Length: 300
Image (cartoon, rainbow, N blue to C red; front, side, top):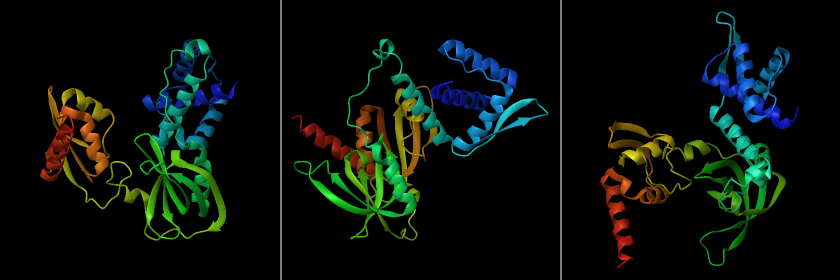
């Protein structure tokens, strides 16, 4: 069996048991159906399944146990469902892009700069071992795309709006900065150790952020009106983890968030156009009006 089949079978087992506990016979039927649909062979013996359960535990930190009273297998612990879902999603994309040319011609890929993920493994190695790093960083907004050599203490990696960023502490200034991985090159991992800054928690630093901007803007309650169509999209892809629905009907929806209304968040609201309206706070509403009026002036 190929490694692709092996990985896909794991994912099928996880998906089936996440949807509902089932007997081994039900699981076999499920794997057989996918085998027919995908022209592969995912059908396994009881012994192979038991080995798969152990591998799923080791790789994905998902515990699967047999419930004797109901004669079903079930997931009893899913340590990090979000990360597991992303692993599965990435494999599914890879699988789709690697099939025969006759089918891949029907897959339209967005042309964009690579995300800089080639440095991920090295950066995580440096973060784990507290090694100082040096790299060349290219800024977006400077003239001629200015490049500078940076020496920093790497602390964490963060995803924001389909991009990856390095969170680091400047080795000389001591300030915390973010660097887009797609603008990092010539990465050099030293063996010089650094001491992790006390009381610094990357997750806490960005807890109230929309993206990567942490400019000191205080978090506050924000209420947004959304059209019904836009609400469906925002519910499927929340603006922030604090998002919750206040009221909803067949025409409109009101959501509430508790976060910092930074520049990147305002830009996101502006991109939604007439499908969104700021209800609270007044300061954010006025800022939106100010920026919309400035935009209209450019067309006069």
